Image 1: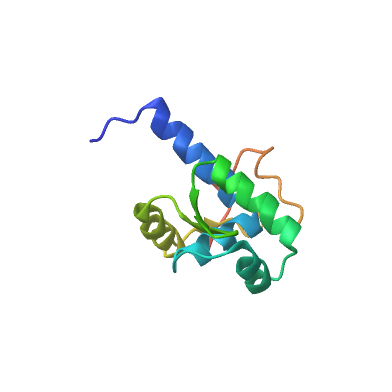
Image 2: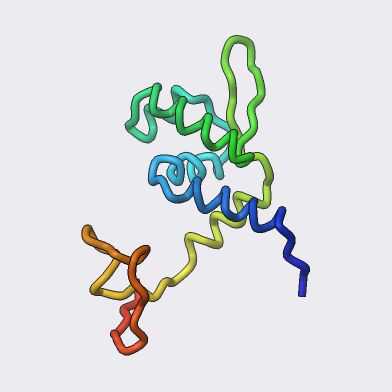
Length: 122
């Protein structure tokens, strides 16, 4: 088994933070197909350019995206090709979801799940 270090833990925490926001998740999924410019991403995802700029700055700070200057424009891409593969793997996951939770009034973060409640597969 591979040794897990604090660096691994911090990297996964950054990924979790990034995936915790639907817009950032959509950006990462869009970048799996290849590099893109912020304006194109904003138009494609239906968000303002200011929102896109803020979310890309967060993803860059998390170390998940990298940039390349292209004249006056900046192109964004996933920082590591393994990330595209990992995101694809995450999309293929089947999660057991408690039907009484994970809705608009979700209390997952504040309560302990009960083993006697049924789970549904989503």
